[in-house]
Length: 184
Image 1: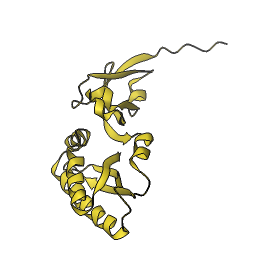
Image 2: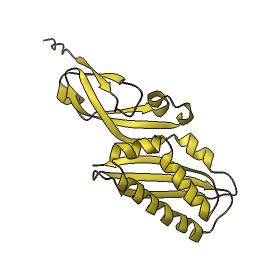
Image 3: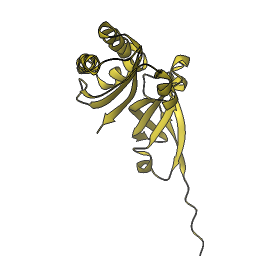
Image 4: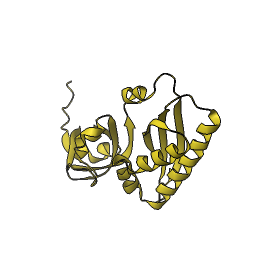
């Protein structure tokens, strides 16, 4: 006996308000409940019309479905591995920091930072930079709601503050937020 053909509906995934586009993509599903929780990855270049951020991918998760529209919220972001590997040069040190912060609306975010120094550096100096950057991240996140915090990361406002503070202690060639993850 032949299987019955199941009719699937197409759901249009809507981007969060901070982006310049309304719709990200479409996805098929039998029922609304199957769309809930789906993840979509899109280039920041596509959703914000910022050609300078070609190396950043934004991850979004569907949180709400109304009719044939699914509404997504930002789940995190990540720099491409090619971009990160180009940051580190010979005769310099790689700097990594993984830190959990809590935003004003009590959402926990794991922030991963990567950087490259101008030349070889002592571990004591890198630890001093690490401690200062953790303090700045805690301060910035606690003052802002989650969406505002992520928007400031996309617009490089958080990175500018981090770079300025890090360069006061030791000169960096490059310092970038490599990845953010919403912890739930």
